[in-house]
Image 1 (tube, rainbow, N blue to C red):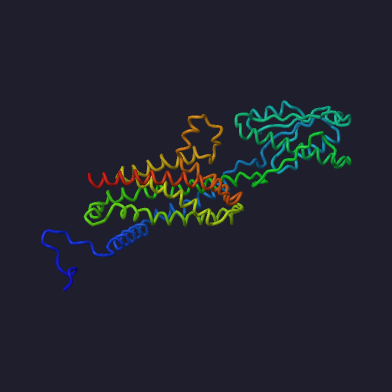
Image 2: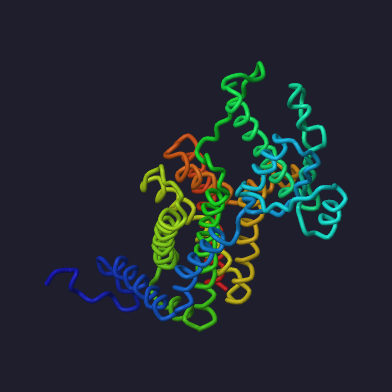
Length: 392
């Protein structure tokens, strides 16, 4: 008989059989998958919520002015003034109300019926005939600064296009001021706001899936009383954390693939990067998201409190401080400094780069490194909090 077949001495724990760690790990992961399968809310958050948010940000929310209501005050009867007026009427960006005086236009804007008005002055045609400058007046509603800026820019764009067509009609193609400014917009020539809103929405989705779902898993074990049963097993801390992370990590990658497919197929976003870069970015971001969720779950031990803390610590910073909606450069410097602690700040430019520009590794790699650093920090905090919880 070999020594390995002999029973252990009385009072000593039996040595762990070879391969027991891998069997425990496989059993824990299977248990977590079984819990996920029995909980429909997990699939709602992982797959239904991304669809809802993407369609909300892709269709319902737009920063592009479409048929914005303005008034056009035409005070000149000349042919050039009529042609300029027609240019505004046929613009897809404006819904135009034609007027003859400024006072009615002002009244409409005071009643919030229009967002601005354009005035073509009485001497417009005469000034053009003399070759003199022929300015127009653009008045916008400053109570909504962003929209006012868009209206002013688009209204001036209509005027510039009209001037170019007038020069073509007069056979003056190529003639113009001494300095000819040729404007080009790279990566998003149409300036579609959807092209940067949808990657931001994907970042919000990944944050919610990573943090909110994992914020519930450890707390759920405590509430159901199964944590004590787990603690009675020879489970190691690393096995416990890995079994909680792995299923949701795969769910997060699957959700990223689904979001990318919807963004390209339904919203027409270009995808100029590679799948490898996209999955590397997603994996790097999921580590801090999952680590934060587990840390919250281990410290609260209550699903309701954990979900509230997950929303407060992940969703709100991602929505407000990641550059998704509000430009970080325009924030006060203390708030700008605070944004460096938000992992989604590094995810959104990485996603926008992969979608719009391609695999620009000089941008992607530093962001991946920072997100991995956040992941290491959160998992260290998670190990510390979980050990204390198990010892408590």
